[in-house]
Length: 222
Image (cartoon, rainbow, N blue to C red; front, side, top):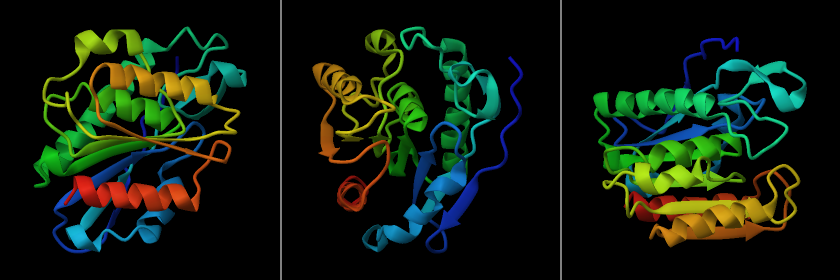
């Protein structure tokens, strides 16, 4: 598979010397700019300056889209049960490098929230639950838990109790609601504290979701 190197992430800082970082992973076919407006929509001043890190997925051919080359964290096959484990693991390493970079810049792991939408949700859950240092929280929007059967053996002890915010549209026709609720149930069965939200929308975000996410971020980064 021909995969291009991703561009440098977009970064938005709400003030000097950020003491917390929010890494947001976009969905299939999008790029980091998709979530730039979120930095303006959310008011996190109560926790001080925040750095939003908005990375771009590499360009790769995606099977379900006829092999068309587009930004993707991993391939999606016609049979959704056949997960692209090699692609998932490669992007897991990319996301781990972003987490390490934030720590090298002075933001400790427990002040970092790893978030994602759709494919980005899958990557946030895959990486965050296996990351060896405790994170502030994990956010999954309109996505699912990948490689779920391997999580019990691979999950990190440090993040065994990490707060998780999951949100999904009840009318989502890209990632069906039952797939999201199955992911929620699998996480809760392993003891993770999941803050679950469902909204009357499709494969998107809504204002109520942004407000709920803001309130959750203020709690986990307090």
